[in-house]
Image (cartoon, rainbow, N blue to C red):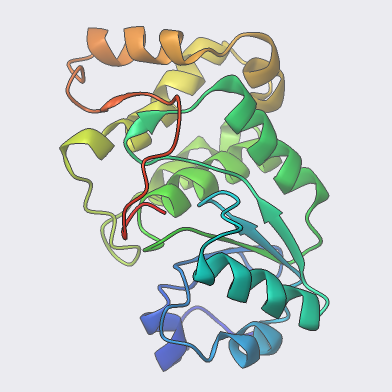
Length: 211
């Protein structure tokens, strides 16, 4: 398995990093091409697409066709970097973590924001709340290039909200039994982050950067 210290040009171009070496990785959308061989060399067996199912868009068609050609599982789990997720969105993400063959790769548009969020939640789901410190590191500016805009500041704060609100319950159980975006909103507002998100998610707003 390639070490993180020996990063190739494609690792840099695609903002690719191992979250747990040999088990889970994170990256951006493969806009520049050449991703087929790249995934093969790293043994990626599943892609968890954080941009949601988009049957009518060329990037989604190309990505799913590539996955089918190479026997790579493709799972869609929609997140919005500016809108607080619904319970169903987070449950779908956890389901993707549980069902994706290893190693899998989570990817969004730039591999900076939604990928940081999903990777942090994966570490907590995998290792429990003792993995909180490692989860926080998934939001580092370097090497992950997480430079959140105003309405993206909730992403990193969500991990702290979850840790406090879960009261020791496993992440998946907390999401299924307790979490609501309204609880997240109330916590964020009470912690000075009322402008750190745009809204509660209702429907995706497409843009070249989000979808």
